[in-house]
Length: 206
Image (cartoon, rainbow, N blue to C red; front, side, top):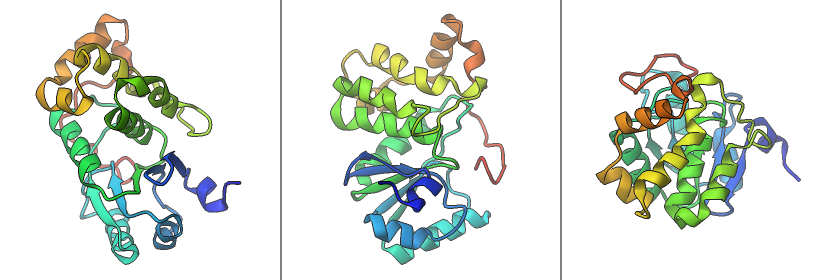
């Protein structure tokens, strides 16, 4: 049975005891939340934001819980650069287990990162399991029009990687221009907001 904290923070295990996913701890209590679940690292998908209170509170809570904090920036509407995805792969490699993936609501960027982690961990044979991380229930992934590229990314990556591991393909060959052309060529031009350039400084998005 899920606890109140699990429901409040949209918490779910991606791989039990190894990787989990959740929303931002807007209501507080993050230190106790992490300790109760044995979380040893946070991979923050909202990027480093020293000037925003949520980031300062989160890093302080992680320190109190004895958890390592990693920053990786994703945008749910803009197609990621190679550097953004390399930073995520590096966090997967470096984070002590179990780690927690989180964005703002734990619905969109977190679904994307959780799906990529399953491919990172188990290869392309985990494709269907990875796609399930985008489910409306229980993960509450209800993408807006410019967020629909998130789910399509895995199909693009599998086509382009041609059997290579996702981390090798990202580090060597991933090109957001090719992703954009792939989406546009399939009538999915409205599924994204272009290629990422600079973040929109909203305290809720970032």
